[in-house]
Image (cartoon, rainbow over all chains, first blue to last red; front, top):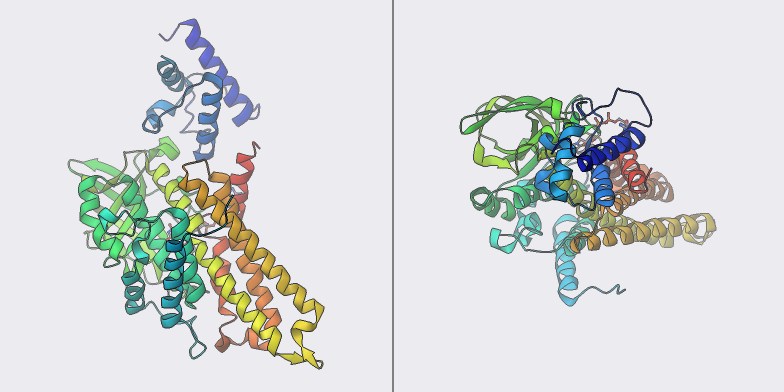
Length: 87
Length: 380
Ligand SMILES: Cc1cc2nc3c(=O)[nH]c(=O)nc-3n(C[C@H](O)[C@H](O)[C@H](O)COP(=O)(O)OP(=O)(O)OC[C@H]3O[C@@H](n4cnc5c(N)ncnc54)[C@H](O)[C@@H]3O)c2cc1C
């Protein structure tokens, strides 16, 4: 799954969102493994906005029980979550 | 759109107001500066105040948010002792409702009947020395050990702490996970390793006791966890939605009493050959107090209405909290100005409303934090 074109697109869209909306263009060497929670990139306010973006961009509603550190720890995990929800 | 209350809502409001006035009002005493009084708590509990929005199955009145707010407003209006109303609301919204919404069935069955009746008192502990507005930067730790979690850490400001039986405590299980590393627990007062600091001396809300809380190797049974591991941030945010709307209804009630008192004074106090209310500068001050009260009240009702319909209400709730708390503080200053020296003297039940209102722009998230939340919702 991880290398399929669809998954790649999801990861790119999420990466662009984080770079543009959260990091405001700041270069932290953002990649699929950057620890978003540990580095405080995603906090409680940002999670709410990010969930809104995922809903609008991919048409999927992330269920509350999936809002966990495991799924939000980095872009790779988040991409996997969105891909699995898109079915 | 319909601005009417139902008959049963009106009846509840009237009964609550009458009870509060009968027991906790009147010029015969200074209401601001006495200590927590369990007999006063019990009178409110008897009415059902401690479990207004707790489902009837668990011993509460099963009210929705809007009706809950209206009853809290009645207490705030009738009861000169704002600290008592604050303590009751902190208990209900920040300690009891998290158990209602996130406790498992055995925990709810064990704790809610006592808490909803007010036989037991609840408190909430998230704030730490280094984690205030940035609450989710908390450092109190929880680690799993068999059928227990072991908690270690210190909480700096726990309303109701000195008298509470149950503490909703937030701890991190993995600091690297930030907001999603936090877990909520209900810790009983007699748990070994739980220690309370001395009561805090404060500017206002004197009858609402507060203290620090220390947890050392405190073993909490797994069944006392609220929600899942890592869901504590969401548990806390849900409790703040209750508090920022329904607790602040108490201040709406206080402002209404304050305005009635100020109008009466402006009509009867004479200076320069006429009642001071006939001086335009004084009358306009009262008109502004009325404007602040009604605007804040409408924002509050709408926030509760949205919550009851299950609609997104983050911005509406923050706007209501901001409006009510800022209005209460400003109008309390105005009330003192309008009463002159009498307003400043401690034995006329005017100045204490300022001391009770100043903290309203701090707890449940400061005014700055509410503006941040509104700004985010605006897409900033
Ligand atoms: C009456 C009362 C009852 C309370 N009860 C409880 C309780 O029961 N349980 C509990 O856990 N806590 C309780 N608290 C604590 C309360 O939640 C905190 O005081 C509050 O969250 C603010 O944190 P702080 O005091 O550390 O101030 P700080 O966070 O240090 O803030 C100091 C100042 O900096 C501003 N500031 C901070 N961060 C930002 C930012 N990002 N942007 C702009 N401005 C900012 C604040 O608005 C404030 O003006 C209570 C407080 C009061 C006054």
